[in-house]
Structures are given as structure tokens and as C-alpha cells.
Length: 311
Length: 311
Image 1 (cartoon, one colour):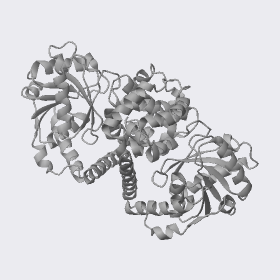
Image 2 (cartoon, helix red, strand yellow; image 1 turned 30 degrees about the vertical axis):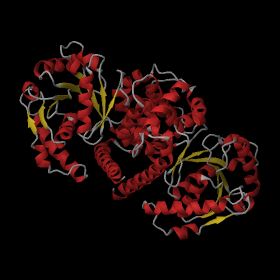
Image 3 (tube, chains in turn cyan, brown; image 1 turned 90 degrees about the vertical axis):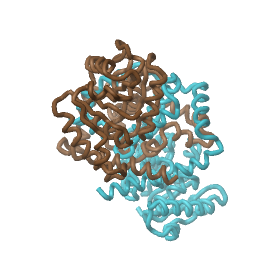
Image 4 (cartoon, chains in turn yellow, brown; image 1 turned 60 degrees about the vertical axis):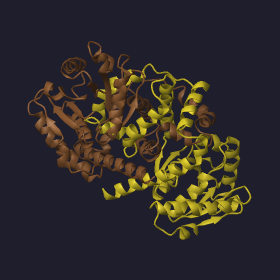
């Protein structure tokens, strides 16, 4: 795999362009909106500078940028590539139409992957002749900083396509995982939903404030998870490993969870959380705090990389 | 608050001794087992050296150690202190007996706090004359590295005691939170239980491997949580903040979670997870990996502190 098409030049499409180009691959970027690709390439230049100053890339940003070319049509973008990463609107009708065009225009061996976070591969590919080469490769925003990629095939996606997608993402420095069967939310958002469900409930029933709940994660629970994940965490938290952990603490976990049933986030509850967040950070500060977050994310990823390399 | 008694010299008691002593307070350490305190003070010396080499303390370890004294009896340990941090066995009968002794021996103004992770304040303090000064101050292991402290009063704990406990932990550099009403698991373990419940289920129903689930958290979901927490994360993930987020994504989260009911971790499932973990790391590697984890935790905390200071 040497040549990649990125379809859609929003936040995610620009981030993917950086991911593939910094790994030495050629990127052909297309967007249906007039002038969007020109703007996108300027913003990609800025993004590469940020990566450089965070120590996440070493190559000159100008030589990385040279590997990104602007395509005038979708057909030009995908006509000679090995892999397509699609990033258009999160609407099934649009995805179906775009994948029809991709299937018609891309060479037979080419993988057709979507960045969608909410639409299963089977839903946008069922109608296609080339449905066996369609797949989801779901990133976390922004993928040029956060490495996880959820590779989620449908039942008719060929094993070869799944394998090629996995290997490509591994090769360009991302961390791919395989979602073995289609499931809404894939893995990451299901785990987030499970924790958020309890977080909202604990605030709703007035056990804790929003700020104290965030502290509990950022200064406690989240620290191990940020470099081990939940299973390695509990595996190391009992001398005999995870089975020993289940033996020791399974009962306590059962007791905590068995009476908790699912409830929607109510309007009143949303207002309560919104109000507490606005006391901590006003709407006017949102943009600046996003910039802070992105710098912290890059620094954290650089820190983890340095620790891995010194091990 | 200047003088602290630490009761119990296991892993948690030793870590608390470091927390209080490095903050300049005097610590009187007691353990009922013969010779335990001597061994503990040696291990505390080692622990302080690790903190020093991770950049988490600047003072000479020998001068910090001088603030930790060995008490011969429980009465000697607590007779003249302002705050007691109890770390004996996680058994209600033992806690009740130890707190009876503490209530009899400690000065009237002294806070009596337990490190328990599973026993509510009301359960170990109900029988005491001084029950209004009893409270839980639950750390995460090890508290000299992980800053969160869950302060969980009973209905009869006085507000003054809750406030003094909160302020002490804040002053010594921990991150206290208030658990407003008693709840099993407090906040941190309830959030962990909620995420683990979904994690075990996704492995059980064969959507994902144990290793890929861990990757999803450590290379994706856990990165933001490690410095923001879940509410700030979603607050920043929609342009209008958390209410906007709920409007945009509440429906998708409902769909993901509404059909999921609670199931105990089955024997077969525990075996499946245990087997996958043992393929990644053998039992023989457990100790070395724990050391790796503790170094990574210290480095992560040092990294976060440096980022906070440079902001």
C-alpha cells in the first residue's frame, strides 16, 4: 500500500492526511466543496507544525506536505490508489451514495474504509458489487494525535481486506483493533457510554459533583487506564492475576452494579450538569480550552512514546 | 493539623506515611505486628528514593524520614495527634474494634479517618461516642503516587470533620473529593465497575479480545480521561458544551446502553479473560510488570505536574 485517497477534508480528513503522509505514503485529498481542499492543505501545514513542536514528528513539515496532493474530482482521487479513507457527513444516505461512487471509481484491489463513528459497514455497503472490500476504520478525534483505530468489518467483508486495513494502520503508527462482530458504538464508545451512564446517575442522585467526578477519573482511575487499559489494570491488582481479582472482588462489583438499571439522561439532569460545567468554564473559554486539550494530548502521547522507547 | 498517626504499616500505611511526611507533617506509625514498623520504615526509605528519582520530591529523603517516628503502642501513636489515618484489615469486626480503641485514645479534636475501600463510615462508627469525628478517606493504591482521595462521611459525621479532612488532603498535595452520601464502592470503584461490566460483556459475547479492549482504552479513550475526566471530555467534544453534547449524542448513547442488563462474571468468562491475559503476560512476569507499572505511574504523574506548572 503506497497511495491513499482521503475523501472529505474536514477535521478528520485533514488528520488522516497527516497520518498517512508523515508515514511516507502519498495522499490524494478530495472534497466536494469548492475550495475546501486548498484551505485544508493550509490547515494541514499548521497541524504538522504543531506535531513538530510537540516532538511527534521529526521530518521537515514541507517534505511531508509535498506528499499530499489536491484531487479535482473523486475519480481523480481514487483512480490509482490502494486504500480509501472516507470522511463525509454522518448520514446513511450520503455514505451509501459516496460508497457507490467509490466502488465504481477505485481499482478492484483497493480497500474502501469509512471513518464513521455511528454507521455499521453492512448498512452503507450492502447494495454494492464490491461490498466485500468495504470496512469501517473508526478513529478517535484527532487521529494524528490519538492512535486507536477500530477496524470493524461486516459479515461479507473479506478477511483479506480486514487484514490489509489492520496492517496499514499498524504500519503508519496507529494502534488498530478488530471489532469481531458489528455492534453499535463499536468498542470505544460502548465503554465510554457505560462509564458515562454511571457518572450521570451519580450526579443525578447527588452523590458527587461534576467537578469531583472528573477529579476521580483524572487524578485516580484514569491514570492506569492511560497506559494499561482496564484488564491489565485489574490483572496487576491481584497477586494471582485477573482470575484471582475476580475471586477477590467479583462479589463487591456485583453488589455495586446489580441494582443499577438504565435511565435516559433527563432534561433536568442535563441542565444540572451543564450548569456545573459552566461554573467551571464559561462558553467563551471553550475554544481556548480545546487548544489546551490538544496540546496536553500531544504532550501526553509524546510522554508515552518516550517512556516506551526508554523501556 | 501538624501531627498525624498512621495505623497499620502495610502498603497503604507506608504510602500515607510518605504523603504526610513529605508535606512537612510529623507521622507516628504503628502496627500491631511485632517488628512490622521497623521493616516498614526501611521500605518507606526505598519508596522515598523512588519518588526522588522520578522527580516527585525535592527534599532529601533522610530529612523526610526523620519526621516519621515508630510508635510502640496504639495509644502512643494517637495520644497527641490531630488526625489518624487507619489502614488495618478490610474486615468490619476489626475496623469496629480498632475504631473503639482510637476513639478512646485520641484527643477529642482529632479526626479518625479510615482508608477502607469497601466499608462505609456508618458501619464501623455507629457504636462510638465519638462517631461524629469518624470518616472514610479512601485512597487509590499507592496514594504517594496517585493523588485522589475519596472523603466519605456518614450522616452523623460533623461538617467540621469533613471539612478538616478535605483541607488536610488538599494541603498535603492530594486531590480530595467529597462523596456526599454513602454509597457502596464510593465513586471511583463504581465508575470502574460500570466500565468493567461492559468490558467483560464485550469479551464474553466475542466482540473483541482482551488485548484489543485494553488498547482501545490505553491508546484512545483513556488519554483524555487521564487529564480531564469524562465530563470535561464531553463538554469539549461539542461546540456548545455538555448540554449540546447530550442533544447531539444522547440518542446514540441511549441506543447503545438500553438493552444491556447486568450479568455476573461467569466462571467460563473469567477463564477466558485469564487465559488471554496469560498469553500476554505469564504469572512469572507479574512482579516485574508491577514495577514497570509503578514507574510508569510515577512518570505520568511527574509529566502531568510539569505540564500543569508550565501552563
